[in-house]
Image (cartoon, rainbow, N blue to C red; front, top):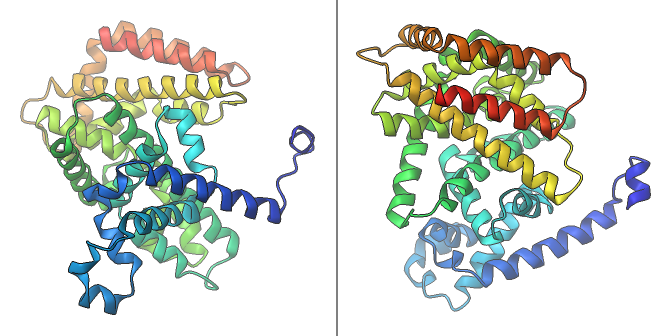
Length: 357
């Protein structure tokens, strides 16, 4: 493995097939040993497993099927591994220290919030209509959304104190935010983020992808922020659209995009490097929510994106000294070469100073 990595060679197709099979057997056993098959979140998967005529005629007896747990474990395993690969669950275990069943449960939540099944089916329907590499990259983009959003849910659930009713409430808030805000993103994003989104969407449209699907795929990286926005809006009692405009306007001022690029480029050769990066990113996400809440605490009757920008400008004026030091630090870091965990930790500390200012 070390020799192949040094030579930048991957696994052969037969090797990947063997790993895929073993990863499915391992995940199946983990799910069967958990309470996931009893979770109301997965109830619909049992019906999906059977042909439609059987669903219509035997929906009630299906619930008493003697192999109900085994069917659900099999179906969940295939649904996840076939979509995102054999290493996905293991990678999230390293980043979150969560169990396999917790990761699967978080992935189901992301699937429901962002209607991923619908997006996957739409990408599948592009067979022989767009170039293979375009279709493959679209799947990668959605897998990245699934990974980041699943980590978000895992961090929230790991904080403790979230019962079944709390999970249902959290899902409802996030689903509402995703459904309401995702189509409006082009109107809510600041200029820099909108330009990047438009470029990616344009590439997909030029390759033959329908515009609405192209927007949903292109906005995958941004869509994870809608989960934070849903939580901030619920905590502050402010309209989702206004919170969105405030969140992104503040993000432009504090260079969230550059921070995300630096974090994504971090090498993680060991388990501890992975854990350290994950912890730093979790703190960055918390600080983004806290700083947005701080800005919104000044709000009076502001409700539109223009007022949100004014609100951010006012907040920046009140934190001018701290923001000047923050800007100088980012300028020094941007001028430096290389990417390291130390850089990310310094950024986290600088953002924490803004929170206390």
